Length: 162
Image (cartoon, rainbow, N blue to C red; front, side, top):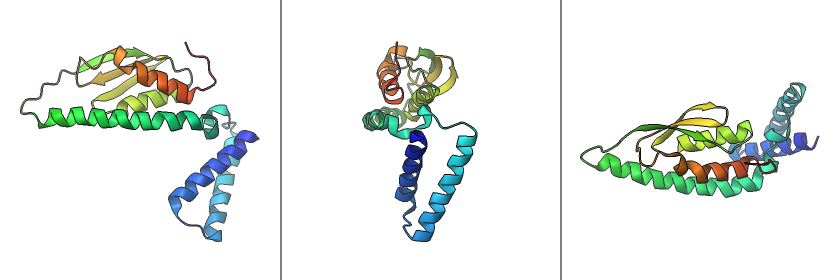
């Protein structure tokens, strides 16, 4: 029940923050639609610890500013490469073993890699990710250790990690 209420208030806050409509009728529609959605999710048994956003709030608040800075740094590298007369890229594919345990953490790690310019997660299979990078020198498994560790800490706060 605590997860259900937490998710309700998190979705309501998200809706209110993004909609900009605070009239009683619109707030009533928001509450009604969220309630119907949560009822359907509860009937399908989809509401659990992994889906509760408030369990990971502090982890995400620490992770996303770090990820934003990594995206900015990668953008700078890609911009410099695009502005050069000769493209000196050397693409590579690499398999990365992740310490993330939950599906949420693995998907967040894969999406973080893809969000970072110059890299794309091609496949997730078990605890391994196949990553394509524009530069062979920077597309090595060791280059993703910090992101993997931070993502696991943000998405799996109470899980035991290897």
